[in-house]
Amino acid sequence: MRGRLALGGYFFLHGAVSSSWLSAMTMFISRFASPDSLGAGIMVGLVVLLGVALAPLGMPLGAWLVGRWGARRVAVASAVAAGLVLGGSAFVGSLGVLALAMVGLALANGALLVAMNLLAAGVERESGRLFLPWCHGLLALGGLVGVLLAVQRISAHVPQIEQLLWTAAVSVALAVGLAKSLPDGEIEDIRPRMPQHFAMLAVLAFAAGVAADVVPRSASWRLEIAVGAISLRGEHALALGMAVGGLAGGLVAARIGVRNLLNASAGLTALGLVWLLLVGDTAASLGGFLVTGLGLACVFPVALSLAAARGSARHAIAALSVIGYVGTLSGTQLTAWLSYLLDVRFQLAYVLVVPVVVVVAGTVLSRGSAPAPR
Image (cartoon, rainbow, N blue to C red; front, side, top):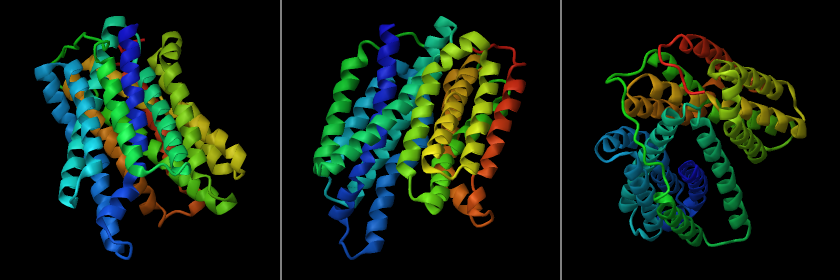
């Protein structure tokens, strides 16, 4: 139990740090770009975003390192490295060095995600019960807490360099403090190949990533036109729904099975999306965000769990992590492109394909030879 709580702490910490450190972007823009140079400001912003956009490159690196050093060592080293790079970036004096720091941060975070997911998959294999949704629920909860803390610090006019250093110091201290309690069981690849039905798992991971990014942005755009901006509140409700759904996912799966869990996820996602499409009232729309988050919460972690149970865990989890992350990054661009083709009221309509994908995936994957943990 202690090892599981420590691993949950790592997921929570990663979510909190990842969602809060970008609040310091204006500090970098003011440092490296003059106030009257819009182009320079955009360039600095793009450099800072490298710390997010290049994380998929660190995921296969993380899988390779886990094969050499083990998931526990890679998780600790990556978490500490990410914190140190984040803190050091507060003192960089040139845009080139900042770019290198952001690349290092992205690689460390990518490797960390793969190592943490592999540790969680190892817990699942030892216990025979679904554990990854609980971990990803804590990841979503950490992201929500990180956003709220960042907003609070900004409202209190805390200097951004102080915010960044505080975030980095806390992340390193907690990563080191929890290191000895992490699970020490290493998951072994039961097959030296990608899992059965990998294409279906990949579609499931990509669809979940796109939906998690598109829903708050598209619905917020529509509601902004209808009743005023509620983007932040919508994202809060979605994150809360994903946190609650993830934390409860393992218990639900133990009672109804993984296939029925996916079916329930599809139903809740469809209900939430229709809710957001039809309801224009701000307060009522928050319920749509919450229900959609409940539905999406378990889709991606269940895909990871199924992949780890059916093939080469290291390579499968790294590949699905890349696919899901790319889906999240591409969601906004996909919505922007479709906004030219669809009326703003129906920007969310195409996301209704996600529940269909989840149901089909649950049907296909339930026929696999290796059962998922309950």
